[in-house]
Image (cartoon, rainbow, N blue to C red):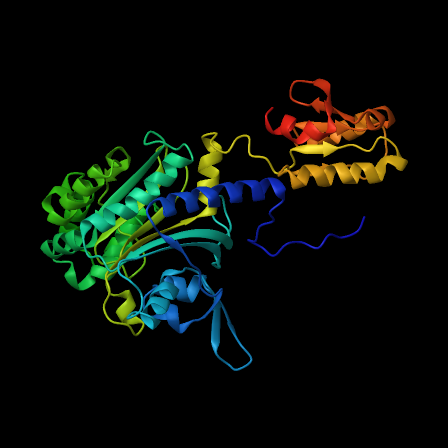
Length: 419
C-alpha cells in the first residue's frame, strides 16, 4: 500500500460537503453585514511582524504567529488577525474615506496553536468594523450585526448568548482594589478565569502579586452580574441594544475582558448557552488603534468570528442540516452512444434557460445514471430515447416523487422551473 502524503498539521481540507457549510456561513455573514450597510473589503494575507508587535499582544506575536524571514531579511507573518491591517489601510486614506466607515471581510488566517476541537491553525474569519463613531450605540450596532447573523442561521437566544463588559468600568473597579499598577496582568488573569481550574487560577493570581484581600475583592467583582449598572456607558449600550431588538441575546458577564491589548471600552463575546464550545466570536472598542499605525486618532469598534466554532455550533443545533454539496438541478441521461450529441444539445438548452444541469458521460444502464442523480441530489432526470426524439418530447423524471411524464421539448425548462 502506498504511503499517503499527509496534510500540514492544523490545516483543513474542504471536500464539497465542507465547502457547502463554509459557503452557507459566508452567505449569511454577507447578508447580515450588508443589511446594516457594511461594505466588503480585504487585506494582504502576508504582513510584516511589526504591524502586530505594538498592539496585538505578546502571546499572539511571540507564540501564535507563523513568522519567517523573507529573502530581504524582513520578518513576515501569515496574518493571525485583521484589525491591524484595517487600521493601517484606513490610516493610509483617512482623509478620503467618508465617515462613518462600515467594513466587513471574510478570509483565511493562521495561528500556530495546538489543534483541538473548535481550534485549528488555519481558519476562516468574519470581521466586521465600524470606525468614526464614538458612542455606545455604535457598540450596540456591532452586537446587533452578530445577533442578526445568529437569527439568520436559526440560532436563537435560547441557544446563543452575547456576553458584554466594559474595560473602563473594570479599570475603575480594579483601581478601587488597588490593582491599577498590575492592570494589564490582571486583565489577562480575568480573561483566563473560565479557562483554568479554580486552584490554579488562585495560584496564578498570587504569582502576579495579588494579595489575599485583593483576590477576595476580585472574586466578588467577577461574581457581580449587576455591576454594569454602575457604568453610564454600559447602560447606554444596553438601551441601544434593546432599541435594536437584540436584548434577548444580551447577558452581562464581568469575566469577559478580551485578551488583546487594544480594547479600550465595550467588549463582548458570544457563546453557546450550554457552554460546550469556546467563544463563537469576540470584539469590542479599540479607539487608539488607527493612531498607533500612523493615522489620526479614530474611534472604532469591531468583532471577529472564526468559521470553526460557529460551524460546530450550527451543526450541534441542527441549523446546517440539508445543505447540498452539489448545485445540480437536472441530470440529462445518455440513452445510447449515438444520442450523445443530442444529450449535449439538450443540456445546453437547459443551462441557457438558467437551470443547473449535468449530463452523464457514458451510455451505461439507465438505473446507474439515475442512482448518480440521486447521489448528487438532483431533483430531475431527463431521458431522450429514439422514440422521444422522433416525437419532439423528452421523458421528465421527478426523483423526489418517483414519477415521470412526457414533456414537449420546447416546454421542458418551464416544466422544471414550475415544478
